[in-house]
Length: 450
Image (cartoon, rainbow, N blue to C red; front, side, top):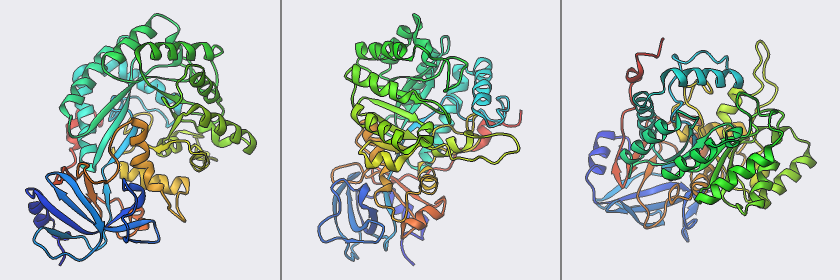
């Protein structure tokens, strides 16, 4: 019997070892900092067989796989080893309100109304702390290394939510890296509150953000002065040296992404803007899509696709099967060298009734939804190096000198990684066994069935 099938023994070994060798580990080359080691064997999926030396919590060496019977060796026999993953677009403040918030009907307008009602009724500091801690503990158990969360930052709410976030970031420091972006309808920047919000965000080291629709409106209408509003947002961001992260075109018919790209160019913000969703791109004619992609590339805009949530919300009509997937054209943008990542978005709230803050699960679903297989090529990068690059952080890859933040999977091929949920994954943080039980829904029991 091998070491990995003996979980108690494995846990005991990895809970205290200062030096360990993971032998015959299978790592997708896209998840290795320096690519495949010379002379390492590579499989048909683009994964290399390697030995990984862990010393004092860091990766000491990555070498071609060879048998090793030394006392500090853990034989993986070709199982997959991945870095801990990165969620570049989440909503920790909205999460886990399902059962308390009004029913959304599964539509975007319904979700917006239900969230507003729940926020006005319940979003105290204590409520936010409890739900955010539940979400972070869940992400921790699944092996998430970093999260960028968008925070609803309406007037009267922003100070409460950002203070709660700052405290959570400090509590989870050294465990899960946290970033935040302010989220308001774009027309919030018309008045004096825009500058106040920018100061709040800057005071907490966040990103300036928003959603490219009017308050109470849809993505397809209501912003005749969008260029002026974007100029205002970018000016506020530039004055405070803040990067920008926006929710854009989360609808079948909407076309604000070109305005964002041109604003980034006007303000010299190439490489400093991220746009999430961008659903309407998928319904453009091929020639129009090529033009949009060229503009996005020129502007240096990064794109976050949220496949699970957009498939849930887009094209939903009662009694009718949806006709389109609602996800952005990832393959075409990657072919144009645009930074693209997949992310989890909402979790058990009016915008998405499901989810569990599990980026491995998000990646698995994304492969199927976006057809990132046959071959897989470097698809694994979309949940590791790609979002880490967008967030500007040094994680999401395995490399010599980096922290040994890893997950070991009971899988020998990428189709096996995609096929199962991997509730038996082994999590290492700083080289030590770090599996945690998922938090119980009883933590939220007083409103789960309200």
